Structures are given as structure tokens and as C-alpha cells.
Image (cartoon, rainbow, N blue to C red; front, side, top):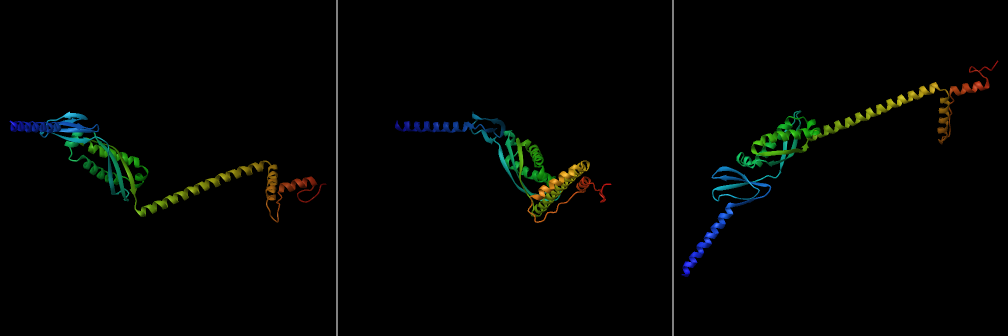
Length: 264
């Protein structure tokens, strides 16, 4: 009797263990940012989740797919621009899976495939752009990269949202040439500003001379102002220039003609 009970107990324990194994294989839980792609005997059933759901043990197979945004570093690529300048460019791409079933069925490894597409597209786009455009209008190149990569990954259920060029490494000779160009540009601006200042100063002096020519008393006021400025200087010898208008006024007071003769 005891052996029968022992055998019965072993069978019950085995049955309970079997049920636990079956239940653990049938119950699946996926997170909010995940989806479970279900295959039944090799055929695609669909994507399930998030939360708790059941599958048929040993018949169904589930593959988890992460739907969060993935940051993909594109390593430095040595490219030749359209104006024949060799540069090294690296970038970063942000993408996410929008169709879990396509990401599993249409491509073997969607992350690696996206990485390879990003590298080749980066080289192609840089090869079609000039160096000035790469340095000054990087937003246009970023937008072009994002559109091209997104079009190629769309059949895989992958959405590329952002592509940014991080760094552009130039050859040392090109850096020196650009530094000389920038220096020449600054010198050009300085000369233009100086010439504009001289032109404005000449216009102002011409207007002042015209005003003094119309008003004879203005030259005498200017002369007195000059004497005041000279008086503040600590010079040993001061020479006072006397304008002709001042001499004519003095001659008129004394009754002497400019030629030296007196009044009749």
C-alpha cells in the first residue's frame, strides 16, 4: 500500500511539474515598449502585446522586438567631395521599429542592415556635395541623408527620424589654406571699413569747408578755437598763424589798404 501511494505521489508531482512547464511556455509577458511576433509552425501569425497573452506551447514561437528609439553611431568614413577634397565624416542616426512583423520577416538583422545603409549613403551624399556646402549648410545634408536612408529602410518597418553629421575632419593642408583665406577675408573687410571711414571723413570736411566759405566769421572762430587748443600744450615756442581775413579786418580799422597805402 505504501509503495502505491509513493508511486501515486510521484505521478502527481510529475503532472504538476509538467503543467508548470506548459504554463510557463504558454504564458508570455512583453513590456510596453516591446512587441511579440508570433510564428505558428513557421507561419507568421502577427504581433501581440504589450502585457500578458498566451501562445500554444511547442507549436508557437515568439520573437521579441524593441520599439524604442535606437541610437546608431556611423563610424568615420573617408569620402571625396565633389570639388575633390578628401574628408573624414562621422554621423549619428536615430531610428525605431514601426512594423515589428516586417522587421523580423523582411530582413535578417534590421539593426546591422540599417547601419550598413547609413554608411554607404553617407559616402554617396558627401561625394555629391562640395566642401563649402558640407561646412556651411550641414542641415541640408542631414535632411538629405535622413530622407534617403528612411526610404531604403521603410520596407523593413524601420523609421529613421534623425541623421546628424557629428564631425568633419579636414586634411592639414586644407586647414592651413582655409586659415589663410579667412585671414585675407578679414583684411579685406578691414580695408573696406577704413576706406568707408576716409570717404565719410572727406565728405564731412568738404561740408565744413563749404560752410566756412559761406560765413567769413566762421574762420575767425575756428582760429580762436585753435589758439585755445595750442595754449594748453606745453611747448617752448608757439607760432600763431594769422589768417588773411584777420589782416584785412585789422587794415580796415587802421585805414590802410591791403597794398600798404593809407587813406586819402
